[in-house]
Amino acid sequence: MSKIDIKSMNLKELTAYVEALGEKKFRAGQLYEWIHRKQAADWEEMTNLSRELRGRLSREADLTILCQIDRQVSRLDGTRKYLFALADGNMVESVLMPYHHGNAVCISSQVGCKMGCRFCASAIDGWLRNLTPAEMLDQIYRIQRDTGERVSNLVIMGTGEPMDNFDNVVRFIDLVSDTNGLNISQRSITVSTCGIVPRIRELADRKLSITLAVSLHASSQETRRQLMPIAERYGLDEVLDACRYYFARTGRRLTFEYSLVAGVNDSVEDAVRLARLLGDIHCHVNLIPVNPIRERNFHQSERRAIMSFRTQLEKYGVNVTIRREMGRDIDGACGQLRRRKMREAD
Ligand code: SF4
Image (cartoon, rainbow, N blue to C red; front, side, top):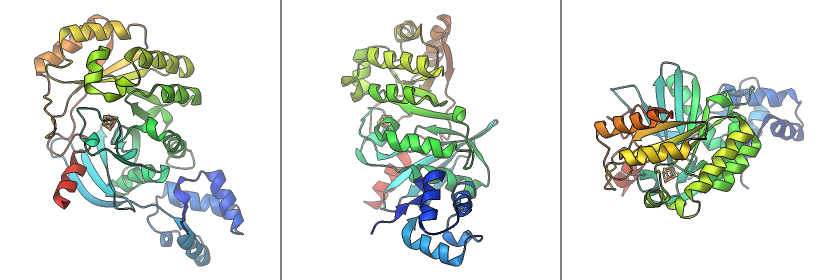
């Protein structure tokens, strides 16, 4: 019999489960606190629960604790890259980025990814499975336990397309922002998507207070198709319409991610076209000097090209920043550490 995924339950569901075991309602609150506030790694840590209850839980329920199998720490900026093993032996990456305003963690939402973006190491081996809400939560919990410091910001931007694992991601957001749990403000959570139009609209209708970051990476449908296979399904115009809908429903400013690839999408003409496209959308553009990856022949834009791209956008009044590169001395780009481990294991 498969065990209950107790870490993916909200407090209401946990209360019903605990009462069905014949326990008092307040036990659910204690259990929830051990799981989500104290991030217990073992039933035996839960010392205010009876020995009998702990024994029963260990037989019936799965606590979903990820096992840290590698950790790289950047000497340049303190970025920590973690590789975790899941119960089935699959591996996922997470990254901790220390900023002056607090610790941000970037988590993975799937094992591998179906989307096949050309500049992404995570896509090379394809998709294996979705992560459960518990597996997403525990990436943060293990990192918090490892550093002893609170995580205050969260980006769902690691391996995987969050909108391709929609229900689990939404449940995860509910759990991680729960005031009885880790209580990360939804305003401090960013979900990144490559542009799955129906899911952007569905997310808009949920009216969460999160930030939606849409990976655009091109100023024309033609270039976008070269970089992102998803553009075959949803055109650039459809994506931008869904973004307008998102703002109309939530009032939340959008972020557009734009990876600059030398000679592909980094010309002044690209910048002007992008500025015109985004003219009526309340947004912020995040320029990302693309991380070179071994398996693809993409090169980072020259510093000069990056700066003039930014200047052009600013001329048109677009709010723009250049993403600070974190952890360049470790396997910085998403998917690289996992791929290296998989190669070593071959
Ligand atoms: S960039 Fe994101 S959506 Fe695209 S292949 Fe990589 S993980 Fe998937």
